[in-house]
Amino acid sequence: MRTPHHLDAHPRPNPYEELAALDDGPLEETPLDEFLTEERDAGAEDAWAPPDHRRGGKRRRKNRFAGLPLAVKAVVGLVVLASFAALGDRWAVLYAEHRAADTLKDRLDLAAAPEVEISGFPFLTQLADKRLDSVKVTVPDVAADRVSLAKVSATAHDVRLNADGLTSVRGADVPRFDGDVQLTFADLNRELGASQVKFTGEGRDRVRANGTLPVAGHNLRLRAEARIQRQGERGIATEIGKMRLDIGDLATYRPGTRASEGLHLTPKGTADLARETRKAKALLSVPAIVQRMGVPEATVREALADDGKLAELTGSPRFARQAAGLNLIDLALENPGVMRRLGLDPDLLDSLAGLTRPVLADRLSLAFELPEPEQGNVRLQDVRVEEDGIRVRVSGSGLTVGK
Image (cartoon, rainbow, N blue to C red; front, side, top):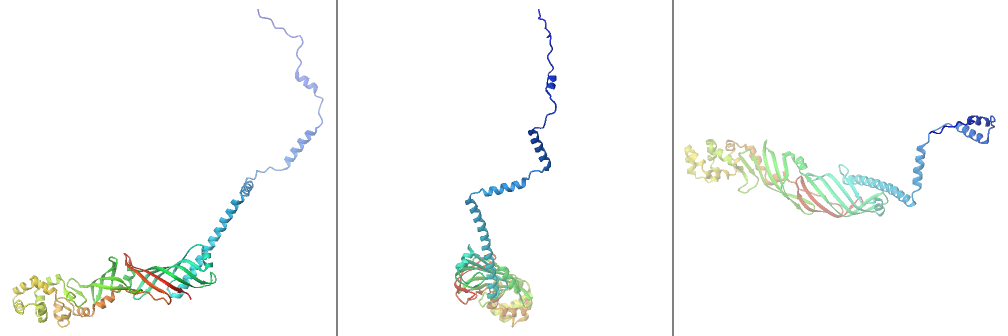
C-alpha cells in the first residue's frame, strides 16, 4: 500500500525576498572602482593603431646580424673587400691593354689597333714587380710583299716592363715569344683575283690553283700546283709546278723548254685535224712542220695529191702521236696563216711565247717574308697547308718594344 505524502505546515521562504532584504541601498564608490575607471579612461584617449610588423622585421634582421659570431663577420668583410679588389685589378688590366694596343698601333704603323690580352692575376702585383707572365698580341691584316697576312698572333712570355707606374710604361723587353702567321685562301683569291684564280689546299705542303687567266683577249683555263716551303729563317717560298693553260679543247700550253712543254694539240685537236681535210693539208703544206713531225716527203706528196692517201695518213695512230708532239709556239710566228686554219689566234700564240715559266710562276707566287726586327730575332718554325689557308709557326727572342 503506497505511503501517502505529507504536506508541510510551514512553506519555505522565497530566496529572492531574502536577497532584497539584505540590500541597504546604493553603496559608495570603492578604490577598486576608481582604478578600473582610470584604466578605461586612459584607453579611450589613445586612438587604436595596427601593429608595425615592418619595423619589427627590420629590428629582427638587425638583431640577427648583430648576433653573428665575430669570425663570420670578418669573413663577410674580407669577401666584400676581395670583390672590390678584383674589380679594380680587372679595370687596371683593361686600361693597360688599351694603352698597349694604341702604342703598338702607332709604333708599327698599323691600320687598326691590335688585340692585346694580358694574362695572370693579380695584374697590379705584376705591375708593381714590373714583370708580366704573358701578353698575347693579335694583329689582323698585315702587309707582306704581294699578299696580306690575315692574322699575326704572338704570345710573349716573362715580359719585363720599363715603367714607373700604370700610366708611364715606356717599353718592354721580351725574352721569348711564339705565335702563328695565317695566310687565308680567301685573301689570296681576292688579292690575286685579277687572274680569277682560286687557291685550295692539297696535302700538307701543296696548294692547288684553278681558274682563268686573260691572255691577248682570251680567257684561258689555268691549272697549277704550288709547293710551300720555308726559305731561310723568315721567308716562305713557293715552287710552282704542273702549270698548264688550256685554249679551249683545241690545244694546251705548258711553259718550259722540254719536249713535253710548249703548245701542243689536245687529243680532240688531233682528232679534228684527221677529220678535216682542209686543216690537214694546211699543216702538211709547211715543210718545217713536216720535217719536225718526221713524215717522209714522198708520203706527204701522195697525201696532198690524193684525199684517200691523206685520210689514210692522218687516220693512223702514228700521225696522231706525231701531231700531238708538235710544238706550235715557235712555228706560229713563221706560219700565222696555218695557225689560223687550225683555229689558233696568232696574237694569242705570240703572247704565250712571252708567258714563260718564271713570268707565269710570278703571277701565282705566294711567297712572303716577315720583317726583320731592329733588335732580337724572329724565326719560322713550321709551315703547314690547312683547309682554309697557310699557317706558319713562328718564334723569337730578345725583342725590345718601345725603347
